[in-house]
Length: 150
Image 1 (tube, one colour):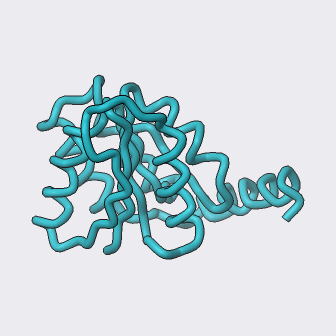
Image 2 (cartoon, helix red, strand yellow):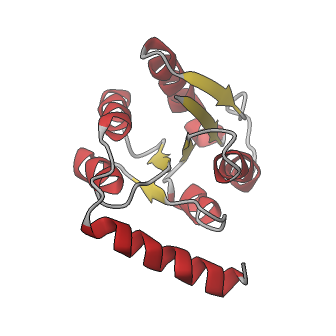
């Protein structure tokens, strides 16, 4: 699977660890930065990843900032994006199972590396359940079309 990944300075170290995990598990990664712990603005990286997933150039994305809140806000501004902030395993599983989330957001100052690895692997390996959840996603798409005039 092809992943787009990005972080700000607060998520840089965790991003680098997650890139390694993805590659170790046979995935491809497009890393949009940040490239150090030097202060940067998270919307710049959230936009790049979200555009890449929204356009279908990458199947899924992962975004990391200090809390994950800012990246979540940015990502969910884009068409066809269902970004989910998951700082523990249950929401990681449910975001895929019920919501077919296509961008995972993590708080680099909230989640330690061991838990982050578990969250990422849970999120990657949990399929969308479908069934009654298709109708809910259709309703979200209708709202998106109405709001954005698409």
